[in-house]
Image (cartoon, rainbow, N blue to C red; front, side, top):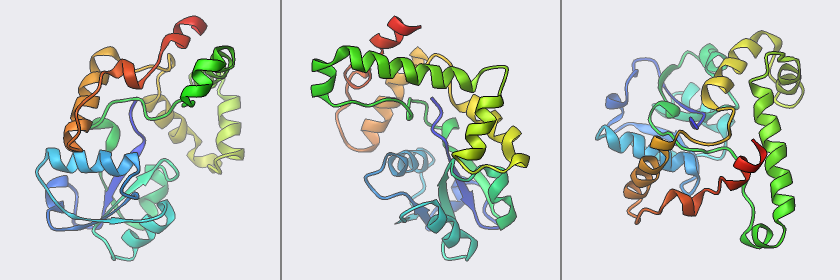
Length: 208
């Protein structure tokens, strides 16, 4: 339940407070990471210019070329993988926002009409999450290499990042979820909603 996004700055910028009046490459405006970033910046009272960019490759390119002062990147690039570009990690989103950002989403129609199928998909998702924490990390290393293109020398760090950000029970720590939803809604100027309306955890209890 730690969103896996990192904010990096050009040389000379090492804190959020230095970003006031800066230019920051971010995700498209309606994407959740863009909202996470707005909340994080608002919490420290800075208002940089935000430049929505299509993907991590574009955002990192803008930062490396000096076209922007900072860029928000996903786990497509882990911290060690962007060090070569001479940029500085300013903040890890998971230290500022705590809520499930990776999971299984289904339509209301499917949820209502095919509960057995939903339960089966949840069980598969749980098995995948448990594999992240398995002592035998052979399967995890193979997946990171074959499906995510991570080089062998970066696997130890990749596994550490995954285990720091995910949790094996596929839920969120109870005292963190509702405050995070409240804060996100406030930052977007929306009325908050009960966590139970947004997240359905009953199938986890069935399959745990």
